[in-house]
Length: 395
Image 1 (tube, rainbow, N blue to C red):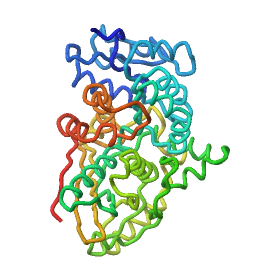
Image 2 (image 1 turned 135 degrees about the vertical axis):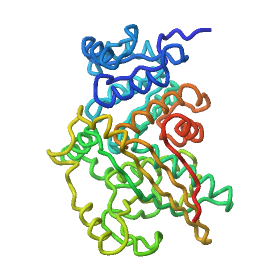
Image 3 (image 1 turned 45 degrees about the vertical axis):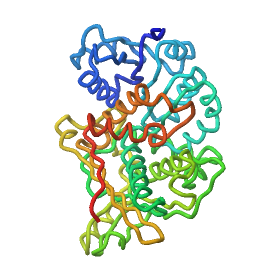
């Protein structure tokens, strides 16, 4: 029996900077005839047509006018697609109606959200509905938080296989990174700070490392907000606060929660940026800690981004170091071959969407993080198609 809906996937926000990159990737990896039925979505038919033509997409590439502020438009979108891939942020400003519509209609959803207070609001408001309708809603399918969420997932699977128990302590350490954070990330940070100042309860959610695990509070977690020498890395190596840690750590704890505490109820996790040994490492660590440019007016703007050459020259390399009370240690490295905020993120969200559609029939309705929803199947896709590598490293 054929699917009555014309599309498997609609890219909501296809005329934005990141949305265009997602469309570029789909054109290259899943062109017409590949078996994936996808469409470009946005508020303006004229802008969609202009982007389609500018990208050299076939003239018959489907275009869907989608306006998240118009209930009739949203319902029409639900009627046409099995999954909505949305790059339209900040999600706390432009995403609530889309999540509600998908949850009610049983339509799958992936986004690039790094806004934990809003995500908790969506969990409280719509998880029960999604579980009933069968909608699989997967937040944070870009640089925040796929490399980190799946890196910890892989490490814990390997740790249990080798030592018979999970690592009670995992350190995420960004060893190298070249590239820019997206204008959407900067806008989301500003919107989150505004919400914290105006909405009761938001600040408490932002401060709580277990804000995405309703009903569960684990052990005290490292704050990660000050430069320090990381003894676990040896040789007097300094580390600094990592700007994405506030969302990634919450998602990793939610993954543990959704996996029925496969990492242990006493699991401790933090993320830091490695700046190097000695006085030079210390100076860089303090400079990083004092840098507030992402949230300033000088930060990147939504719709802006680096050139193709800059995206292609970017990369990242993250270490995950797991330990337990018995002295066992294990290292996992995760690398990406493009700049994190754009080139790699656009590939990750596209593959997450396709993985959800094609490989995750057993994942039930609900509000998910990438690891428990997609796990090893997404790791395989990202390694095969999206320029990521996941590897156990010698200690």
